[in-house]
Image (cartoon, rainbow, N blue to C red; front, top):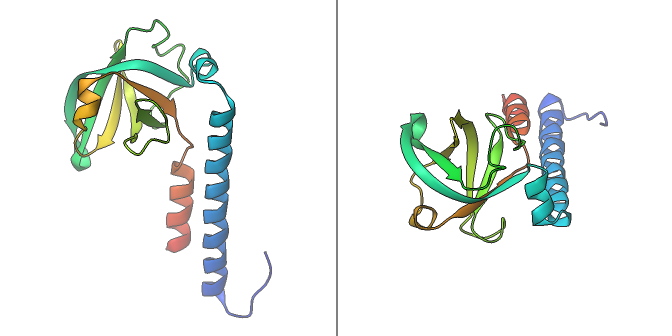
Length: 151
């Protein structure tokens, strides 16, 4: 980073811009990896799950809901899926980039069901028919860094 004579505020603004560009680059790398890896391979590697249904919804702090989801696929378990509490995931029916895709956070495994925290209400389409899950680019580190820079 270059020195600026505009003072610390200008340096912080520049750092925020660099941080945001790095976040976008990380998102793009994640999207490219997902787009280049066939769906079947993502399932086999534990990066995705399919045929999910909502077993139950529970209230959670902050206006969120925890959906307890299950799948008939034998790979849908804590040992096969590469998911940990706090991991961001995307829920969708056909394409992870579809407009109706939902963002969720892995809450925890509850027996054979996986808890997923979502903001607000769950759209009817997710209650009416099976859907898919796929890991998303981690955002927490970028969120914490941006908050620190903005202070």
